[in-house]
Structures are given as C-alpha cells and as structure tokens.
Length: 339
Image 1 (cartoon, rainbow, N blue to C red):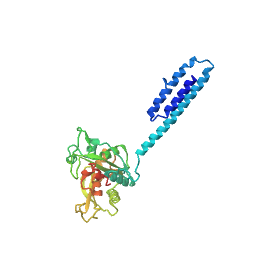
Image 2: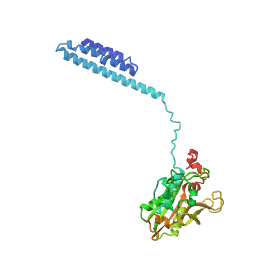
Image 3: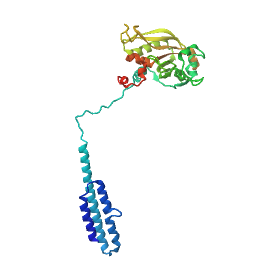
Image 4: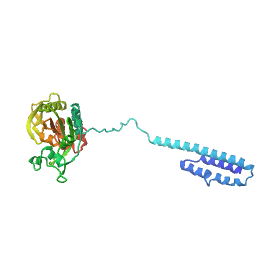
C-alpha cells in the first residue's frame, strides 16, 4: 500500500504539470482526491492492514493528500494569474481619451422662482403652508364670500367630481382652513397647483401654479399691504422697481387692487416685455372682507388683515423673459438646461 500511495503522488505531480485550465485542474482533483478518487480507493484497504501498519500508512496517506492539495492550490493560483494577465492585456485603457461627462440636473425654473419667493416672505415673517388640491366647494367659493350661482364663478370654472367636490381653482381655500384652526396673529403664504377650464395656449393652461398670502392681526391697514408688497417686488425684481396699485374687485377682499411693477427690462420706458406700457401686472390683493373673517369666527371689529395672490407661472415668465407658458411643461431638456 505504501508503494501505491507513492505512485499516486508521482502520477499526480506529473499530470499537474500538464494542466492548462481551471476546469482541467478540477477534474484532476476529483480524479485523485474525490470520493471515488484513487487515493480514496487505496484508503479503503486500510482494514486489511495489521495494527502496527495502520498508523504508518495513515500518516503517509495524510501526507500524500496534503501535498497533492498544496500542489493543486499552487497550480490554481498560477492559472488564475495567467488568466488575469491575459485579460488585462486585452483590456488596455487609453488614458488620453476624454472621460465621459456626467450630466447634473438643475432645478426647474418654476422651482427656482418659488424658492426665491418663499425666502423673501420668510424674511418678512411669513411661514409656508400647503393644502389639498381636491377641495370642497365650500372652501373654494362659499367661505370666500362667493355665494352659489354668483357670476364670478364663471371666471373660475373648474373640474368637478360632484356638486361639492372639485379641483381647487386657487390656493385661497387654505386661508379659510388656517383661520378656522388658528387664532390671530396669522401670517403665511400658500403655494400650490390649481386648475381651471382654460384652453392651452402661450399664456393659458388648465393646470398652473399660484402663491397666495394672508396676514391677520390687530390694526392691519392698506398701508401694511402696500409696504409688504413693495418690499417683495424690490427683492424679486431689483431695488429700483416701482409699484402701482389699481382699483379692482375681488369677492373676498374690500377694498381690492391689482398691483403692477415697473418693467425691470426697460425701467418703465416701454419694451416688448411690458408691451410698451412700462408696467407689468403681477398680482391681485386687498383687505380681507369682514364677511370672510366672520365666517372663520374672527371678530372683524377687533381684527383686520390683507390677502394677495399671484401666478407663479406668470412671475417666472416675466423674470426669465419666457414667451410661451407651454415651454415650462413640455420637459424639453434644451429649454430646461438653460436654468
């Protein structure tokens, strides 16, 4: 049996030198060391040995197994190194080639302007709140001093789910919800998406964005409204911006006004952006109607307030001189990457 073990070791060493792949090496391992391998077959005859012979042959068998395993592992490492070197030689990298440019996304122009507006009003002490886009007719119209069948509803026709549930036409409903839940002083802006039945063209869309603001406290006057909005306009369009207020009618404010800013492109001289008028309309505003305060259980004899609302899309178009509203919703990367 000793000669058999030595012969197995000699044959294994010889065949190892002829192995040229990992698969061949595995086949050789199974051939000599597997469950049905040559070494295993020899060891099965251990029972025929005398008690004195068994320790000697057992020790020799373990030595042969250990040396064959060691030689197989060394051969495996050599083959793996050869394979690696061969692969590397075929995968040469030309370091003179320019690298691939990684495109980094930018904020959407609407988001850029919204962030700027939020920052301005944050500095003026206003917080930012949001509300549901699917709204009750009560909050969208009735609580805002617009009774049922009022003709002003025609200007804000929207998408109805039923008689009471609709897609909001403005973010004003959150003014009512906030006044119901909080006692004055109240000071916040409400940005969000709104919906109206409009035909899509360069200046209209059935889906657009608004930012509304509300301040309610004691002794609030029209001068507070004007001062707040003048600061806002100067921060957004430049310190040389002038403002003017024109009388208007809104159902939830009294008195009401529309606010214009001097054209920041031509400084009021007249150009394409302001349509040669020198002024650009940017928002509507006014003192909160007493009826609205009373609906929200706020004593209109003690408290007063002002509200304002602007179209974020329109402000963005004015600020970046964009002449077509649709550009902001078409996701054309050529347009968006300019910002």
